Length: 157
Image (cartoon, rainbow, N blue to C red; front, side, top):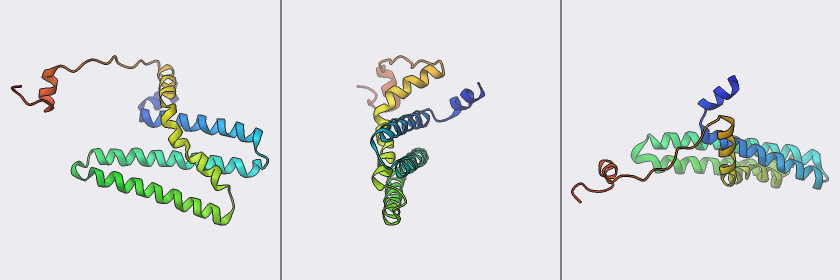
């Protein structure tokens, strides 16, 4: 039970993303094992791509945390973080292509688990809720007084 308590303290969205990436990697590995002839090149390429997606998601989370506390420079921080991840993926793809140690398309498939995770998030969210025995709070409409306090509606209207 210590593992579950530790996972509760982690960033929940990041945990859900990682579960989705892991699920996508397992599905791609099973399909690849059945359909691909050169399995020795497929598996390392796929899992290196998934690991790179894990690292990219952690970097994205930290970049967003920094940007949210930065104020006016937030858009610059997010843009620099995005460009850094983009350049890193391009550099790794170039190195993989030149050295021919892995399959660049399969690496890219593994890295795309970062994108597929966005579509799997509702499923992984429900799975995490069941794992942690939690439920989502019910949505409540905003009262006009709350909007005035937040500055969305000018006072006196």
